[in-house]
Length: 233
Image 1 (cartoon, rainbow, N blue to C red):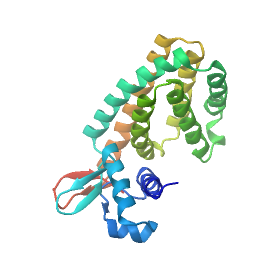
Image 2 (spheres, one colour; image 1 turned 135 degrees about the horizontal axis):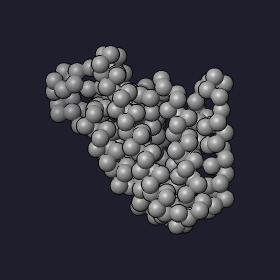
Image 3 (cartoon, helix red, strand yellow; image 1 turned 180 degrees about the horizontal axis):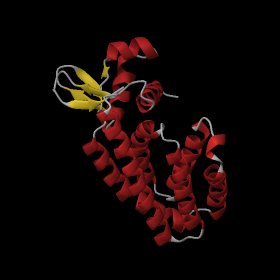
Image 4 (cartoon, rainbow, N blue to C red; image 1 turned 120 degrees about the vertical axis):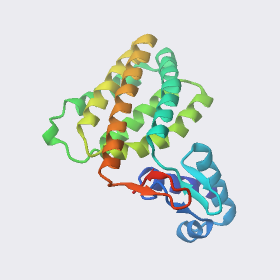
């Protein structure tokens, strides 16, 4: 693996897992000492993260992990709607019924598991990522796959806000089942309706969780340079 790719993947994982919380300052010196990389691959990694919107320039202070705001979440979900509905249509047109039948059955196990028997949801989130990857692959469109990948980091980061409400994971599993069922039947319209409904419900859940965080002042901070309010950890 190229050093720039390694640094990029390390920093992205830290951002989406909130080990680098929104509002965290990033400096080349600190990153170099922590990940053991030289200046060129660090700059390459940071440029990729800026392009994906996970990091932004902070005038006079370097770079900062982007904040999570209601406005930003709304814009992200507008982009999700535009890309994912079309991606799901392509998946229904091109996807393997066997792949999506298998995913459907594994998601059904999650959706039908008694709530009191579920502990760590790590396995579910891995399955959810597998579902996303299968849809992206089934589009057979490399440009669309790249765009979906770049949105994916934001989606993973936002999941932290709803992890305290595990019922959402079970509901999402059922919504993914409906998408899988439509894809395996090559039902483009049905797949588009199912993913649009999933995106709508997910947006409502994320916004409710974000408002709760801000109202409770659990993750609310202020950027001293800009005076703006930002959700951080």
